[in-house]
Length: 229
Image (cartoon, rainbow, N blue to C red; front, side):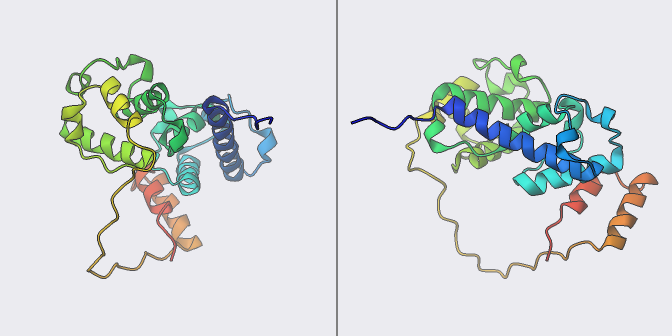
């Protein structure tokens, strides 16, 4: 019997990255009011005429589309649509079937580099986390991203048991595919309703506040990304 061809992790990952790139270019095209086909993914954002206002709009749109928390400053570290898409791809959940140790390590490396604001190639997987500059606050952020990416419920203390990137990757790769986060406890207190969406006039006022230096781009991005009612 002839078996069906299997898609490798690399093929799936490449396809997922292409999908993210299509999403990023689509959002950029919407902000610029042009056709997506006119967007060169290797062209720098500044060359598109992306000012602070449009940067806020783009980042809010990308976060809404992919459920990420990218800050406007990320466009300095990832200055083209292609680079931004690759960055966003590292923030998205990794399929369970993709949990080979080397690929997990690559994902963790990208997440850690984003937190430490450095190039992933500068991170030695054998260097203990504290020596890389990961303090208790950053450790909590890192573990939260790991849990989001792999569907786990690890605690920051796990970094004491797995003290470097290589050990952490080996640990995650060894977690059974059926494992996942514990079921959340029932919420006893009433959950407050989501804030209403901003009206067009409010959006205009918000962008005017950025132009007048009354708000930062990141503050405007957070407000633009507020959930709708």
